[in-house]
Length: 123
Image (cartoon, rainbow, N blue to C red; front, side, top):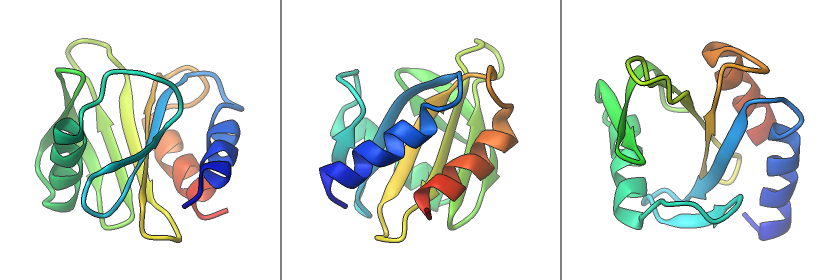
């Protein structure tokens, strides 16, 4: 995916309140693009993708645990239950990359975010 396309996806996701960090990983978990500068190492990104692909019960983002509530080949939905740190939602893209966003339950609830990011990723 090119930077211009990623920027468009970020704009689409930001139409709703509650969108925080957004990033794109390749199929190996390498960070391709980030919506802004924030703390995310390649190791953390790879570990998140492994948790998604291997259907682990939780993933870590910025040292917080997110319980994975929905996990299939094309979509991810995880929630930080204890700390109120929001959600992690993701979708595979048409190009085979992984679009992931950190969201809050403001504009939408977790499963709505999960459906929405999938719709945006495939638009």
